[in-house]
Length: 108
Image (cartoon, rainbow, N blue to C red; front, side, top):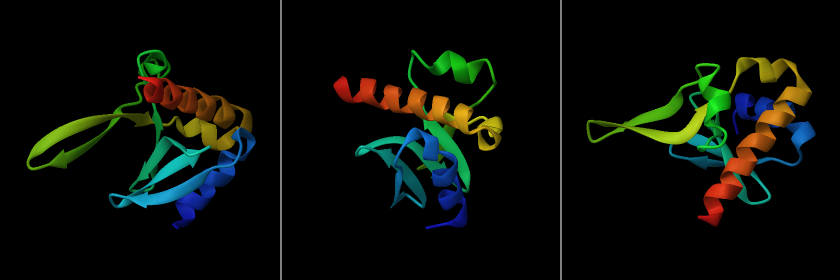
């Protein structure tokens, strides 16, 4: 695992146990078996949905994008605010919000 992923898991400790799995050149972050975040190029992205998107939009936090076969695609993961790395309570709040979005997506 990368040092950055280890650091992210440490930052999210107040949220609860988080594990990482390699995927597509990055890592998926899981809590209770459910992916709620991803790390790509040492950048943290959190799961978002219609209910949580305003929290990301008001901070101008863009979605994760990738290119495949010359076409750009956006995923339902948005850039995490940099401030959560300095505030364990804020990190927990954002992780809970992302996990809840992942739970809602799973129910669909």
